[in-house]
Image (cartoon, rainbow, N blue to C red; front, side):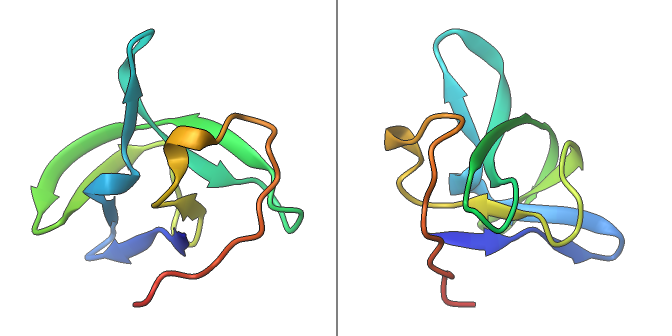
Length: 88
């Protein structure tokens, strides 16, 4: 599943489940679809305050960036996917 990053009050928010971490990287990241081909790109992010089931992204994403919110554990940078929009 994928969705677009949302902006509320000038701040980018994403679902907390979109934020990934791995053993080798202390910094959080998200998987973003780089273009219309569905190519996955790993994007480091800096997070801020939570807001319900979402979390503020201070740096790394822009309004409208398409991100992976489910199935991220089986994806790697450079993989290609067919995005399925999450229910809004």
